[in-house]
Amino acid sequence: MGGNHRPLVIHGLWPERMEPRTYPHDCPAPPLDLEPALALELADFMPGMADGLDQHEWRTHGGCSGLDDDDYYRHALELARRVDAALSATLTTRAGGETTAGALRGIADMFSPGLGRTLTFHCRPLRGASSRRPYLIEVRQCVDNDGPGGAPGTALACAVVKRRDQGCGASFLIAGADSR
Image (cartoon, rainbow, N blue to C red; front, side, top):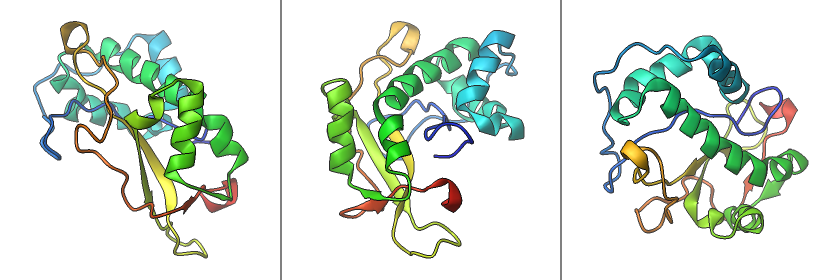
């Protein structure tokens, strides 16, 4: 979570195998050279570009995707926009408050039936926060690489591929602008 203007931002798009923590990484890839218009679109969803996050993610994961850099980030944007459209209004209105993974999955399902089961929520206490309760820090989506040329394709039920929420407990807090 973060950014000055949206509650969800892109960290990366990682090709992943069925076994946890066995994703391919650091595959040979040409240097990142995004189309200028795409770079502008991406910057809206990936504020970490200012610190080279796009370069890092391309070197570490994008080169393993089987896609060129523009297609890799187009797919990342497409997936991020869908999850953002489903959850951003709720995350914004609940900022500073508390919710559950089940509630957010239900909201995602109202936007697009079945979307909620493709999401996992990751939480931890925030450094310097007055509460040691968990805060939502990340939303992940489980997606197969069955699209054309190995591109992200079918959204997967995270439970089927052994992905689960982490650190959120029964309920968690949504960071407000003052707690980020």
